[in-house]
Length: 159
Length: 159
DNA sequence: GGTGAAATTTCGAGTGT
DNA sequence: ACACTCGAAATTTCACC
Image: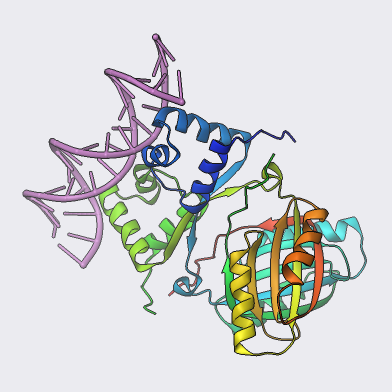
């Protein structure tokens, strides 16, 4: 994996785009003290290098009826490569599973699941999770309050 | 909180913008089968209602030197309102803490922390977490692989 | 990195259904 | 109330310095 050098101007651009992906290039140029042409060139380069992975709209979960978030710890029966691969594949296919992490330690996977209500979550647990072969144990933690949620990575010491 | 009715066209728009926030309005209009003017009106309405919360650029953690993700379970000493408030405030102030959830059950908080390496994580644990008054216990789980990460909420059964 | 000009997009006003 | 067409203003995006 190549490690593109990010100069302070690149970091400024990334920092702004992490906050507001739809900013006009002219305004972005103003904020970083360049003219639009070189600004756009830098943005395109950052996109091509993959530093900027994608641009997305973040929705309000309440307003699209996804008010319940549950964090689920999952352990699998036997730790075979095939079992792990299949489990991850199933998680990628389920839209209510927003994040899925393979972890070190007792827990094999941690999931972040977003559903409308407890009824929907119960269905997810029974119809989806419990029906996947190799799932030994699940432990669900209900989120009471989202104290912080950001997609912005710090850029202080990037190479 | 108002619950705006989302018709199928609105859901189409939201679904596309969750995938690509920088799509041109003309292209968005093409994809949903409307002309640009009413398409833009719908987008603006969804923004004003707060259904669209914000637009962000997602970066590649590897390429900005944030390759280590750790999930931390935190329990506090006594469950006073002030202690919880102060803890959440500290987490909001730390850029390496991307997500912080108040949870039901044994664990009080779950954090998602992104740092360059184990050395940086050790400093976070000692200098930040351990120095916050009221933190009784922490349990760190290192993420080996991010099997899935999406910010897209499903829109199937939104009201 | 900057300049200028062409191509494209945004977004209002006015019209129709 | 919702969508369409038209046109001016702004923005994006070139080739070239």
